[in-house]
Length: 585
Image 1: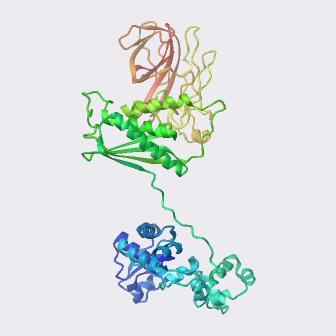
Image 2: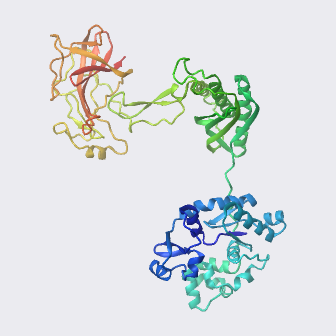
Image 3: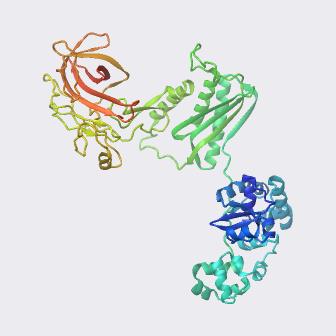
């Protein structure tokens, strides 16, 4: 059974763009007419005409550009209407679809009543004219739909025999057959198959089979996606946590069974609720693994507890009651937003795998359900020059993607203080350098390792230089020259603390434009605390980032210092002011 909507590109233009199909309209592609309206055909417009010739035949012709996407979008309601009458629809092209005739014919009492029912339903649901043809095979049914015929079973070869060879839809082959004296499909089907294959090739033998009515290709029926969501409506609104927990468990088991019946598993769950006052609540839960029935039940229960109790905020906080439902929950819906094929889980050699991790994940996910997704975060290492840039905090369960590409290389500690290293350029055009030749460490305490050098090895040439060569040599993961090597600080302060650094004479320590330190640092004072002696230091490590954007530019010199009490600090000097960025153990 072939359902055909005549002049579909014209009808689609009327549905989407509002171009009236009752007027002369032509759809053009590559300067030629591919479809036209009935009024345009009355004025002599035909498929294949050039634009200028078509407009000369019909001066009032409306020209529309061919848009396959528009045709497909407009045809979707027609497909839905056909599927409401019969299932197993295969889309041939926008404007045409096919389905098996056996089921609708048995249900509606014959092939003709089934065809009439489909045409009537499409007209009522979509206000679109359609024709239905029935024959043995998609090719024959498509030609029968042009005239609305129902070909009896077994009569398809006789029906095709009288049609011209142009019905094959292969203009070069049809032109060649006509020059050879073959004018109808019957004449073409009468030729020996071996001779057709030798003369016209594979495409010719395929057309020969179609002309003989031997189109036995099975239909690739379009299957509508299954509705995996589960919904439950309650007679009495859910206002108590224990009642909501019982409802969550039964609904979660239904969802898990539905997914298991389709061989699927859920990775992202949407919990939707509607209260008795019409208030709609919505929350998305994400899991980096597969959600089991117990995991789905826990998340739904936690979410309902969070909604019903709103215990995640202090009583006086802003929005403390904004997320609390104004009435009991009347309808609950679970939607599997992210699904994948469930191929099973390989158990461990000695029992279940990851039991402790699963318990921890459930506990942290419950905290998120009560306090919100941002209440539990995990660090994700990435690229950057400062410790603050190398770590990004993401909510528990979200995708762990670093804020900046690349991981900073951890250089091993060196037994002695490093010598001066030439300045290098960074992957984003920023300039960084190792300490000047005057940067030394005092005392015999263990020193911090040298800053990471650039593998390219070129000098900075006055402190600024294009970064193209550095990026090209870096490969897919760009380096971060100037980033601090291992060991990394144990504590990275969210906001730097003000500090002062003095030399042995009590004078403030400064750094010149040429990276010369005024004097070896001897004491550091953090905030209003007491001064602490410095027994070892390394630096300065200068960084000049984003100098091309004045609002985002940062220019500073960093020092790693070892204190007399055994601790270590990462100090930064920017604009003549000292600050503490991180603390070492």
